[in-house]
Amino acid sequence: MATANRKLCAQRSVLVVNIMSSPGAGKTTILEKTILELKPRMTMAVIEGDLYTDWDARRIESTGVPVYQINTRGGCHLDARMVRDAFERLKLREIDTLFIENVGNLVCPAEFDLGEDFRVVVCTTTEGNDKPWKYPLMFQQARAILLNKMDLLSQTDFNVREFEKALSSINSEAKIFFVSGRTGQGIDEWCRWLEEEVHKKKIACS
Ligand code: MG
Ligand code: ZN
Image 1 (tube, rainbow, N blue to C red):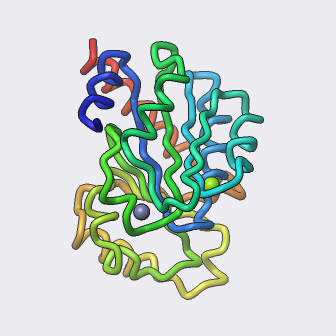
Image 2 (spheres, rainbow, N blue to C red):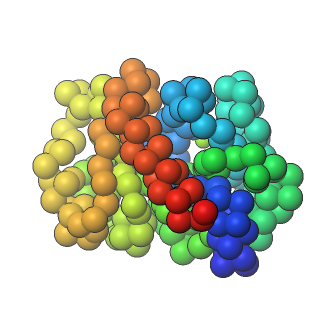
């Protein structure tokens, strides 16, 4: 099913980004900021995965992009079939980038291929800098890491160098962006990178 999803999105030349993190890392806030930054330059849509509630979906909706809500009813990850159902409700041909906000969980979402182009993991300075060691699968498979809550760094014992060291021992290719969903720090750099990825995908699909 994931392979079929990937093929369909290649035919429609949609870049699909699977965003994962622990609960409360700021996925939705970063998405809001990202959408507002990129809206003048590309079309986007969001698949919102949550256990219950549509609060995050409503937040995204207020940015004006199409949102499809998946409630997993207690399920702790999204799977390719759920994403396929969402595709039927989205106009893929009109979308440059489709973000999938996965369920907040650093464990099993890593085991489920949704058919995405790549994965992004959001970490925070308010968590331990040892997260890459503790959840290696999640970090091994990420193309990019957003280290969020940089505005709080001075209030924590988070060691950026140790974090980078841990990450590079597990995944030396991953790109790191230092961001704050709250202040908007680093969002422009992340968005520029994302735009390049969209561009590369368009060329690959044409
Ligand atoms: Mg959320
Ligand atoms: Zn699960």
